[in-house]
Length: 289
Picture 1 (tube, rainbow, N blue to C red):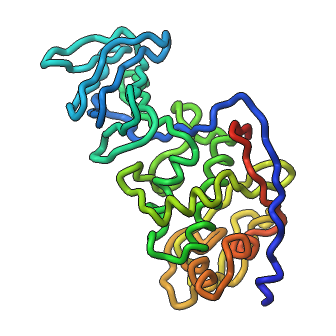
Picture 2 (picture 1 turned 90 degrees about the vertical axis):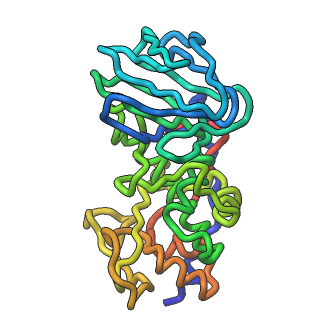
């Protein structure tokens, strides 16, 4: 196979929209309480009225609980009713928010979804990817494989957000492999962050729509397809023979991508091998999907 001949020039498409370039990640659903901390001073806002409610001290744990249809928070050992079913937590200066024993960029949104609490990380798309790529692929792997992973993860995030997979729950994606593994700022590595930055905004498109670029760890020799009518997902040799099958087998094999990168193929050639009938595009600073 002449894989190097598969490379296509990047088609730059600017997708203009007033919509903010961010995604909402469901970090926790269900349960009655959520614990939050901040690395710097932060503020709690009523998410419905955009009204400042309280200030959060740095490196202090605050417990939010459901209270009927509203939320309460424990401050200085007092349980205070916040009078709303949604709060937004924002740092006052650049910093990180903490929950689930991990640090995150962006803001937190806490919703009372009918007596159960939901924690959402509202984070810029590119910052989200900095916590996805090292969670999905070892940072010591080949640079071009990391870049291919960054582009695939970006495309999947945008396409899944557009599809509204989790819209009824108030967020776009979950932080597990049910969508993409996401560990926040706590898992960021220099090599994977560079891969995200070097491919900023690049996605795969077909008919002006961003594609859901499924990927998996390894398929043991041959990738699979879910929909025989899909032109961009086709069964191809996965270049991971000898590696134990791990994952659904559809789309890009991560082990295969790393093996191809070791043979000298760049990220765009790797993606052109595993996906078909698409063009590369670049999102604008504000993206619509």
